[in-house]
Length: 269
Picture 1 (cartoon, rainbow, N blue to C red):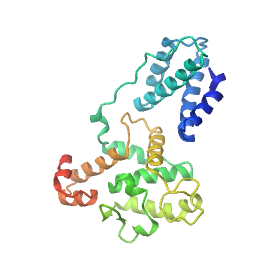
Picture 2 (tube, rainbow, N blue to C red):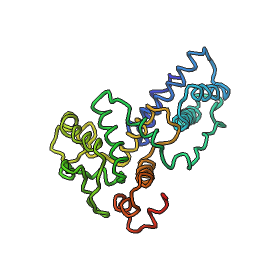
Picture 3 (cartoon, rainbow, N blue to C red):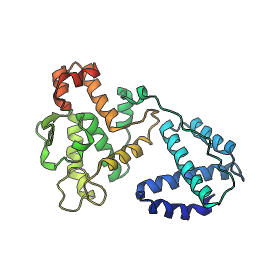
């Protein structure tokens, strides 16, 4: 099944997919191909694809990741079908498993600890971990995180100045503040070698986008065995819920989140 991958890759780029998305699709397809080779499977059938999905579940792969792999295979086989490279689409009837919205609404304290306990193996992974920790430690939105400037960080009191629509100052816990200070002093200079004043940039030193942040979180969460889908919103929800459980007032959490009225914050009670 790998012999048409080059054509498929060119097709994805022609459709305007980003290099990150294309790489993810190709990687998923290769994992399926490796599975078939490992189990000496010669012909593709629906039973083969179903066995691959069950294999992923048995090895503790998160449902969100399995759903992505199903989507990758569907896209690839749709391409092969349209090109006339195959006679029958083996994944046409296979469906992704719905993930309960309740399970993805927020993360438990243990799940947060599990995420933040991952030891970064590169400068990029340290940046990714710092992004996730900052979203949880402050409850800010992705749109606010991408706009953060170095001058917005007050090391003395461990706070961030949030500009824009919901202008405010947010306080983070001590470890997050120290980790951010270390990132700015020791990691960021190795990533951002231009004159950008953004706290977080991509590996080319350019300002991160909302889509870029989402991909970073997806990639980092794949390193855990947490079944819930980790999103910027679930991190923000977790921050609010845990703050209230720690005895913080509704008014304090409202200010941190940038809500205009208490009714928006009361949903966390």
